[in-house]
Image 1 (tube, rainbow, N blue to C red):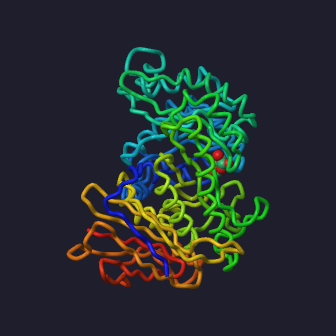
Image 2 (image 1 turned 135 degrees about the horizontal axis):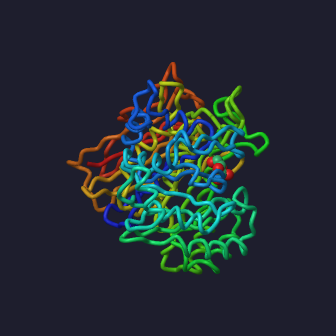
Image 3 (image 1 turned 60 degrees about the horizontal axis):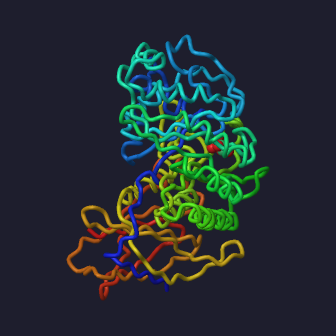
Length: 493
Ligand code: AHR
């Protein structure tokens, strides 16, 4: 029997809503076709941005959106993407499929998208192949209200008032596609570049330094030691790859063993956060620097017949579990994790939305973001657990993964994932300092008949959120039956 003791009065800190953030790159069909169809398209749009996608993303309240990359960011020269569209530079997207990038979606279009979504923009600047001057000018172009060549150019291009821009990344994966640097070198470059990422007027920028790849603890150590006082956030990238990079595995054609391997690898996020946080604590005991997990999610082989450089993959019930587990882990570490951005919003990697022409579907991952939005800006609740172990690919791990929060209205929300591919788990949940009698208790579930169940354009509702009632109350305790391979939300209103 799994036991959870939840203290409804002991708050462990605010769950920053930005944990529910997204990442969208100029990669495959994420920007073009995904968001951008152009003003003349038959697909209903507002200033070129598709309305169905905006509505779907508004419905899950996405708080922050990272752009333009990714690897693309360190080859992106922002001036290519402003001014009259038909005069914009056509460049080669070297990283992703070698296709022509016509720059029709640039700074104005991205910031318009963020305004339509009512989401905070998070822009990643070019350190790898850009200059300090170029970065300095970009920030001025976007945020300076006064007179200057950049602000004047923005006005000429149709935007009188500056935008509010809070989040700015100084390079992406500078240990890899962003310049193959060593941390000692990047730490100095970071210090230099960020100097010119200035605050104009009342715009205050939260500066995010490029952090480690997975378990590169040395990178974290060097960055914290040498550049801590110049940064507000340090990023971390970790993807769940079931196989290895040469043979990652299929998004939908997998067996029980691969399910186990995938979820075991997903749980590794916990260890990474703990170990990187321990290093950060050494240099930043007040926990002022946020850990910004600005790329995470499942990464599989591309769908057969699609461009390998486009990273288009399907999304199954297994992805719902990857999302549910990661988001619970981020919630539980909300003292340090201040933002996370799933890779990537549309048509790329663990997407929440897939499109095909005018059609759009919501993936199982979308439904997890929908279900978990109750945690945004809520207070994490203290809990103690005594969870049964299951064997995942020869490793013993707790079979249930959980987090809980209390929102401003006093509603308590508990999200639980059953990692076991075959067995229902029984969970006893004691709510301390809270009488259950008289409270409105409800639950919702995401699950399916098969582990690889997924939504298609012909059958878009195979995996969705369903009401759930296999919960009983006895002696101020919730007795929950958690079906195999499921994500559950229990709410106490
Ligand atoms: O999300 C796809 C790519 O993965 C990003 O461009 C890069 O930052 C990472 O390696």
